[in-house]
Amino acid sequence: MEKPPPMSMIAKVKDLDQYEAHHLAREAVIIARRKAPKFSGASAKRFTPYSGPGFFGIKWQDSWVWFQEQGIKPFTMKNLAGKTIPMWISDPTGKERTKNPKAKTRVTASGVTQVLIFRRAAIKGAQKSVLRNGIRQFVPASYPGAPGRIGLREVGQPLTATGKVGGQISTGNVGVRWRHPGLTARHFLAYGITEAASNSRVAINQLVAIGPDGETSVSF
Image 1 (cartoon, one colour):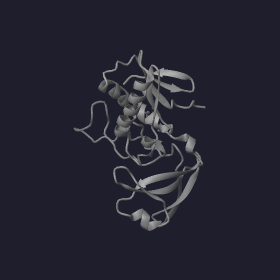
Image 2 (cartoon, helix red, strand yellow):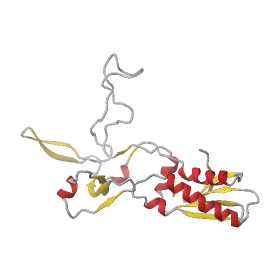
Image 3 (cartoon, one colour):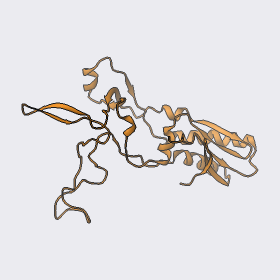
Image 4 (cartoon, one colour):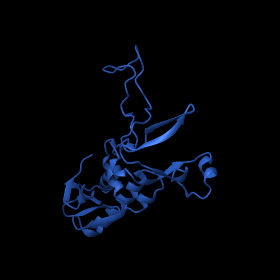
């Protein structure tokens, strides 16, 4: 079982009193919220100041905030097999809302209207029946790792990239279903903390994330 991610980050500052620490923590939250990913904006609203003598920083309530901060590599979401997954999708034309008027909707912080839909991830090895050109066939169901659409392949000569072969699947297009593309590290928490310190001309001795197993040094 994977251990829970950190849920707070602090900067250790020698001889920092609790009043200045509180001020710095509040400023760090304000800055981090501005830099955080903007979907609904709900996670950023739940950032809270965290401070005491000798340290200041930020706490958060949603576990995925840490993965947005540090980034993650692409992976197949095998843990979703057999589950029904709620998904928010953009619906700029209203097509999804017309199909299902009772579906929940939301507007992101950037003004995009999204609709809540549900998709089921099949169990590995499952198949489904489809009709193609009047012929019924059995094909792999959409389980995590099942063959999927390939969005991009390498072009042929003379435009093929060095070390690649024409028709080869391009990087990031693995052609399997329920594949998470990964996340680029955003470092909005670390930025908020270090920027707040810089604005007040405070020297940080160490930046750490705090999780169930204790402290982990952070660099960015």
